[in-house]
Image (cartoon, rainbow, N blue to C red; front, side, top):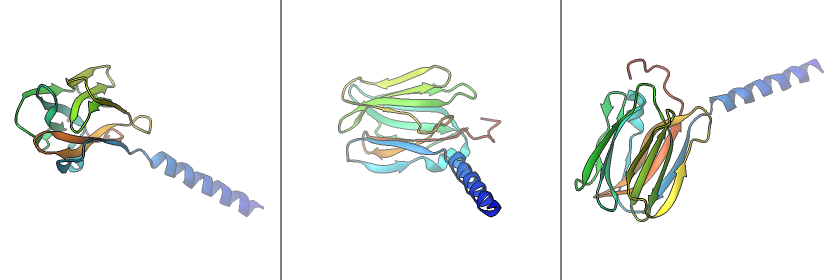
Length: 167
């Protein structure tokens, strides 16, 4: 009987550890089916998202670039339109991304844990609202598809990196 109780306790402990270890999730892909695939997954190793550059024209999100720690990702998308740049405050994180799309991404709105609302693009198209699946997780990187415009976008969430004192 004692052996069964110990085995049950061990299984419960291992199960709780597995649940606690799970923290990553993703949303999307939001948009159309064209363009070439891109992923910023490797950039998250440089640190948390610290700035966002978005190029917009009259109708669409044309291109994007994200700074991870102190390293800018490769720029994806086209060259037409106006470039806008937003810097996050130290320790600030994106906790929600909403937007609009049809065959291309038309609008992106980044919401931070400091209550800032950072909108880009036009408010037309089919809407989406992306939030992390697990509590205390933040936007860690972006992927999707792009050509001369941003065709589609996916959002990837995980815990804020604990080893980022200089970010």
